[in-house]
Length: 61
Image (cartoon, rainbow, N blue to C red):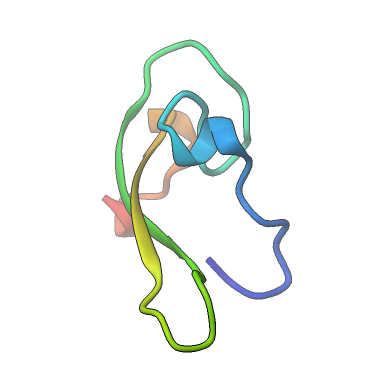
C-alpha cells in the first residue's frame, strides 16, 4: 500500500471487502497483509487481507 491511497476501511481490514476496490461480496482470495500504525513506540499491526481475483495483477499473486 502506498502513502497516497486512502486508509483501508474496517471491512477491508476484517477481510470482508476487497483491499483493492473496496467492494464486498463475490469471490475474495488471500491478498497478503496490510500494516496499520499502533503508536509511535509500538510495532504496526498486521491484517490479512483479501481481494477479488480480477483486482489483483499476476505480479501480486
